[in-house]
Picture 1 (tube, protein in one colour):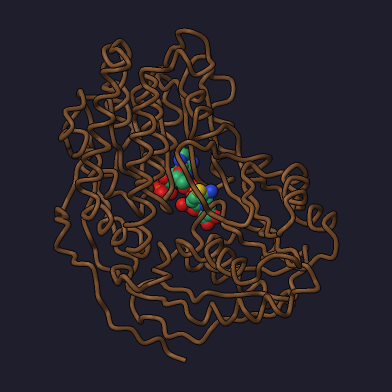
Picture 2 (cartoon, protein in one colour):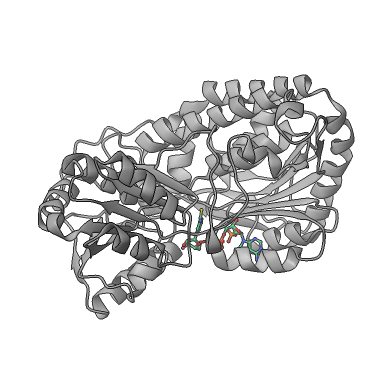
Length: 476
Ligand code: TAP
C-alpha cells in the first residue's frame, strides 16, 4: 500500500538561512583561521542548506581564550543577574520557536510536529528551569556557596541538536561557567541561530562560543588544557576515547552515551495504550534517540495479540516530508547513518530473525528507512545487542517477570526502560531490579527539565536535568 497524503508543508520561508556561517567566538561570527568550510545538507532533499566554518586548533584556542576571559565577570555576577539573561534567552526561543522548529526539521530531518511540539518547548523549558536555579545554588544541597568550574567544553550529537545544546548550556551558565560548544557536523545550524539569540539577549561576549566542525574539532576542544569541564553526548565509542583523553587531567567529565532500552509489556497491560507507547518509543525522531525502546519484550501469552495490533498501527505511520504536519517519520539524518541502519537490519535477516515493514513508498531523494519490526529475535543477534539508532524494533518474548528483568538487563547499556502493566507493585519491583537510569511506567519517552536523566554501565555517567544536573557544573 502506497502512502497518500496531501502535503501541507510548513513554510520554509519562516526561516532565513544564510549561504554561509562563521564560528561564533567572543560574541562575533568569524571565519575559521585557515578558511576551511563544510556544507550542511538537508537529509530530506539532499539540498545544500549552507556552508559553515570548520574550526581548527587555533579557533579552538581562540574560543577557549574568549570563554576564559568572560568567566571572570560572568562567574562574579549575582545569580539573579545571570538568571535574567537565561530568562531572556528562554523567552526569545519561545518567540522564535516557529523559525527554529522549521530550521531543525530542515537540517536534521525530524518531523515538524516533533520539532514544534517536543524539541522547541523543551528547549525553552530548560532555559526557564535553570534560570530559576541561578540565584538558589546555595540551596541546592551542594553547600552554602558552591563555585562554578570555569570553562565547559561541550560536544553534542545530531539527533536533538537544539535540545542537547539546551541540556548542556542552560545548567552551565546558571552555575556561572562559560561555554565552548561543538554541535554535530550534520546539524550545525540551530546552534548558530542560538548564537544569534545570545547576541539578541545581550549575553556578555565570550560567555557562549560555538565552534562548528567535525570530530577533530571535538577532540581538540576536549583535549584543550584550559577547559575545566567536559560534557559529551554521543556514541559509546567516542565517549570512551574522550574518557581516555580526560583521564588524569582533573577535568570534570559527564558522558551521555548509547542505549538499547527494553520496553516490557506484561499480559495485563492495556494493549492499545502499550502499542502507542511502543510506537512512540521506537519511531519518535526516526529512532534516533539514545533512550529509544529498541527492544520490545512481550509476555508470551499476549504476543500474537500485541504484534497484530502493533502491525496495524505501524501501517498507519506516514513517512515523508519533515515539513508536512501529517508526517510521523521523517528523514534519516545522514547517508552514513542510513547505511548503518541498513547494514544492521540486514544482519537481523542474515542471523535468522523475521523482518516485517508496512508497504510504504519512500521518496526518491533524501535518506529514508521504513518503520521495521523483527520477530524471532534471540538475545545473541546483533539487532538485539547493538544500538541501531533508527526506526527498527527487535521483538523478544518472556514468560515470567524475573525472565523479563534478566533479558532487559542483558546489555552493556543501561539508559532507560519501559514497563507496561496494571500492577503497581510489579512496577515498583521491576524499577528496583532494572539497571537503567530512567524507568518509565505505562508511558515512554517522557522528558522534563526537572527530572535527572543519565545512564548506568556503558550508557555513561553523570546526570543532566533537575537539581542533579547542577552538580556537573559546580565544585561540590
Ligand atoms: P559520535 O561520533 O559520537 O558524535 C557525537 C559528537 O562527537 C559529534 O559532535 C561528533 O562530531 C563528535 N566527535 C566525533 N569524534 C570525536 C572525538 N574523537 N572527540 C570528540 N568529539 C568527537 O556519534 P555519531 O557519529 O554522530 O553517531 C554514531 C553512532 O553513535 C550512532 O549510530 C548512534 O548509535 C550513536 N549516537 C548516540 C547518541 C546518543 S544521544 N546516545 C547520539 C548520537 C549518536 P561529528 O558530528 O563531526 O562526527
